[in-house]
Length: 592
Ligand SMILES: Nc1ncnc2c1ncn2[C@@H]1O[C@H](COP(=O)(O)OP(=O)(O)OP(=O)(O)O)[C@@H](O)[C@H]1O
Image (cartoon, rainbow, N blue to C red; front, top):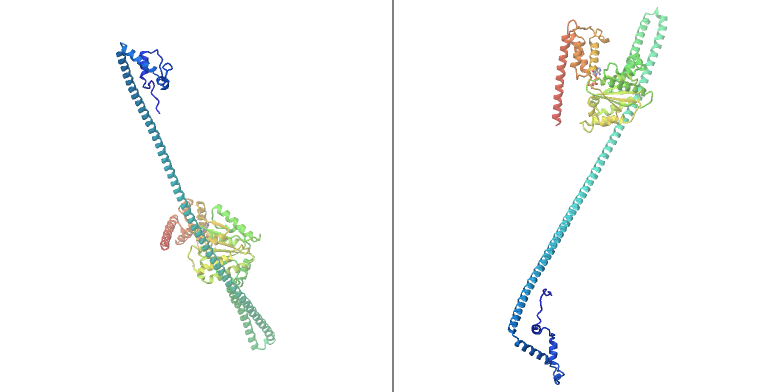
């Protein structure tokens, strides 16, 4: 309900009140009810009117007022005034209504604006809420998607992991199976080799007994024959002596008997030699051994004094480096090895196996041979290239070698030169079945420490070695190409050896005259020019100088020849290097 506008007068329609105000304003205004009441109520004075309830006093007063009004000279003006007032009031009321309506319209507009703004706000709030909801839903969707993807990824990862584990398991099983197979094969191989070796040993032992028996019998027979011969000769001599002077026929018989004795002695000697060689072939030095310090049966028979000298001969470990020119550090390392090797047997320690590696011609073999001869041990020298041609017999010969080494009292230094030719890597190199078997037999015999033999390998290609061999090697020693100082020492040493007056004690048949121009400065030139040369190439250079000198009538070596020979050797060296490069390139091409 809109409240009435301020200042508005509510028209109650009581024009009487206005006229009473205009015409007798001091008179008391009466209420219509009063007027009605007065008209209806019977006046006491009129008597009887109280019966109807009508009060005529009011009417009377109205009539009086009307009369007054008519009697008034300003009545028309008053009416006009009243009309004007009434019209003014009407206008005012209209204006107020218009104002009120304008206000109401404004209020409605405000209300509409408020409602519109409320509606906008509500709409905005709703749309924001919708947006937030959409965002949230979107986030949820995304999160769900991410979770789904993550779950898928994890599932895939799990699957892959399981697959990988499965593969690893299978691979492990495959490897175990292969290893097991390899073990079985190896065991079978070892058993076969062992059986073969034992069979061979047994056979040889039996042969040995038979041979000894046979030899004993032969020796007994020969002794008996000799004793019989001597007896016969003695009796004949005695008998003959008595008849000697008289009986010419007997003298002849005596001469014949003497001849028979000589023949018997000769037969005995030859027979022993043959028997010795036979024993040696069966029981002596194994065929793989090229050179040994152990006295063989044939040596004992053929040169007993020398053999005995060798048996009781003394050794000196410090001589292991004699004639080998090496860099100081390497020399002292090798000296220690030589002394330690000589003391090993005394200390009852197991031998340490050695590998000497480095470029060709750097003194590996030289040192190993010196070590072998001066370590106080017996030695046996073999070369790796000898095993392959033995074919199937390789295994037997390997066992024979180690059986032979086992019988040594002093211990044997077994030096394998060019060892890579035999002990090649089974995994990476192509080797024949026989070679593989020989290598297995070798590994079998060298698998544990021994106080009977020491292995020394020399090689130019240590990388080609079977890993089992390198694993069995206790010390690796690298021989490098000689440096400037070493080359100087070597050149002087070999010049002394091959060009000096007495051939350095080598007993060259003819004395070489070296020209005076071959002085230290020329030697220095050679030292410089031979950079990158091996000891072998330097020793060959010295031999070439000697040969050039012997090519002259007076066995002289002039400065020019000295330098010419050097130049020739340089050219030859380069040519050899070119050949080597070509061969390597061809091999690589073939391998590819
Ligand atoms: N360090 C050295 N000191 C003195 N002479 C050496 C030296 N190195 C090599 N020589 C000479 O070279 C020759 C060959 O040496 P050796 O056989 O010891 O070489 P290597 O290293 O065993 O070579 P390869 O690997 O080819 O068998 C020797 O006889 C010697 O004359």
